[in-house]
Image 1: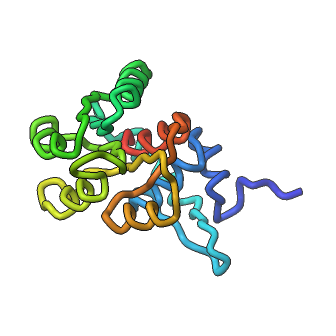
Image 2 (image 1 turned 90 degrees about the vertical axis):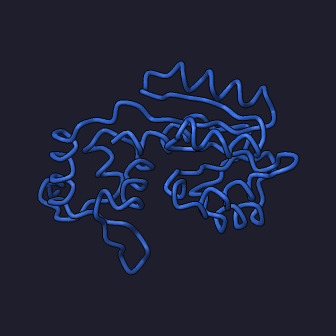
Length: 188
């Protein structure tokens, strides 16, 4: 059996194993353009070994981000409180704040300056769809990553929030392992 050390192209799982991260993190780096990839005719992502090695060297020499600012937006104060407590209790450089309605987000994005917003879709008044559209329409805030959360996962809600500019939509109760992988993609 041939050694994988000589393969010019690697799968996301092989890259993840090599860099000691999850395949979700590898895919997020590729989607953000941080790690070059190619797509096979079958739609599978492949990474040139040379590019992966260069990426690994850059990560070692690049200054690591000190903090990742996360804004939790949820009208359910228990959900918001849980996420704030969970994120601040992790061994990662997260600075976390929260807002309990869509209107409060407007001032928080300028005073707190989040890198990522965890955004509930179903809120009274200004819902998550409208909040996301406003964030993405403003040149000062459009680069903020938006990860939507909903207790009403449906293909219609997913389509609407992705069309509004969110990068992902996760169901409640939140899968904290998956959410952490999404957040960690910004730490490199």
